[in-house]
Image (cartoon, rainbow over all chains, first blue to last red):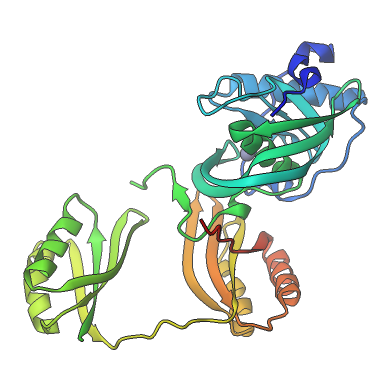
Length: 185
Length: 172
Ligand SMILES: [Zn+2]
């Protein structure tokens, strides 16, 4: 795998606006089940949204990615940062992509996923562990293509799914692949 | 070969499975198939055992489990079922949205309507969020696109989302 240095070097300070924390919405909010709109990555609203997504991810413990529908905005924008996660191998640090799509994927692996918008459940999901993703950086709008693997690949697909109105539960491997985080007392 | 279906339901505590399987082993029964889960915190186990003991003997052996009234046990002889080879296709159905009555019945009616068989089902309620995940066998020749559109129509009426995906098996 080769790391895209343009994406690796990108940081939220490139956006030129200070992000503010937004409230994370939870299922069954309809915005989470609705495909997001494509966006103009150079528009000031999208730049602000990108900064806010990163800011919200930063203050959320354990959060490695956040998509616009999770803050109530039906748009194809998400951020990820898996650099602190123990399952991570090579990675691209913090970045935001607009209108992203998975171009190709291979080597399916199953792993358990959780989501800030579905706090009570986790589920086993099978996804390609090596992918190529294409999208646009917010602000400049430049198109980037990057290779991702392992945990970063999983996080990217989870967030791209959010932008398409899908939750990890839509990809649950089977009836016994969904788990309650808490027991009911 | 005599098969017995056994259910154990009730208040959860450590050791229920250990006690149950110990009694079953003590009667010389083979544990052929089992499933156990917690339903809203309640212990729920179903077993199919094979062996020479009759239902009354098994009930008697398991009686200590029910002594304090916290568990109920049923034992019933059942015929052997032949596992069907199945020339259909396997699917995973996921439905989720706001909790409301009738989600499961409306969705499974669509599957039943095309002769589909649900082979595994889990539903979860977390706050007001309802989730159903089912494994479904559809008969060969099923118009899957038509099933999907009927599921979408039913789901839209209920205000929930639905996805139907082919169950993938990675042969290793
Ligand atoms: Zn998520």
